[in-house]
Figure 1 (cartoon, helix red, strand yellow):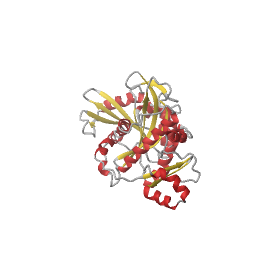
Figure 2 (figure 1 turned 60 degrees about the horizontal axis):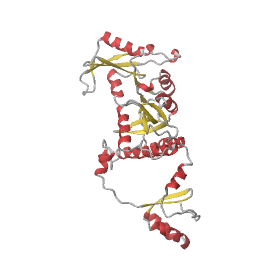
Figure 3 (figure 1 turned 180 degrees about the vertical axis):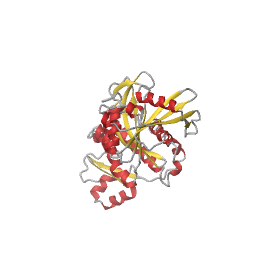
Figure 4 (figure 1 turned 45 degrees about the vertical axis):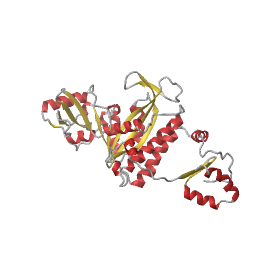
Length: 361
């Protein structure tokens, strides 16, 4: 938008101070909410994106441990040993065609527990629909949440059990007693055998047992190391093979996190201000989202399964110049041709103001 009030129109098309001024008007939560709103209310409906399988997970966004100036950061035990400072991001990832899209996020300090950060998001999310599937990691184990999703939202949960849980021990004992093992459906796991164990929910009770929904289990036996893994679901129609096939979709979100950190630099922050950090995170997520969606289209399907740096190596950009014009709180983005047309229609006094700007293009 072009305003006759041209006070403050400098020689640069966009100054760092102006960007800081604009970002200062919003807090971190507003940026996070904006991402969720834009995806859920505009992008997903327009493109008719309706995933029915979702993956819940969290990732740490680490910063310099010694720099205490990072606003609202926390300190926790690092997954690599020692301690880490930074933030944590919870995501709901929807499986869409041959890729995935990050549908909703929450952010907080790194020392906030995964479940505490994501519980409200899961309970209130608009992307979880009746009949959908939610795949969780061990950090999100909650009998109450499984009960809520099944009874209130009609969403089925898949989650691995911890080794110290009674339901884990019961499922393994039953699998050993029944001796009904079959091959793992993943051909790369030739040393693993699986067994179906129904009704393990009675060994995993909530504070209100009468509200507990039934759950079935798939026990996975790693024959080479004699280790056992137990995956449970509230979907009672699924076989052992179905359960383990569904849960094996979960590592896809780990690949998202790897790409976002290694190639998209989501945690390469240039400011210690928490609202600027949130803005950086959200902008990165939008870029990643649009790239993922592009790979599902006819024009971009050749890039499916490729990382961003690999795509850039062979990409030949088509030059198309744009103009960003801003005055105080008003701004507009115009293709150069359209801007020149607007310039031609302005009176002489406005043209004199715009000429130095055009000269920089």
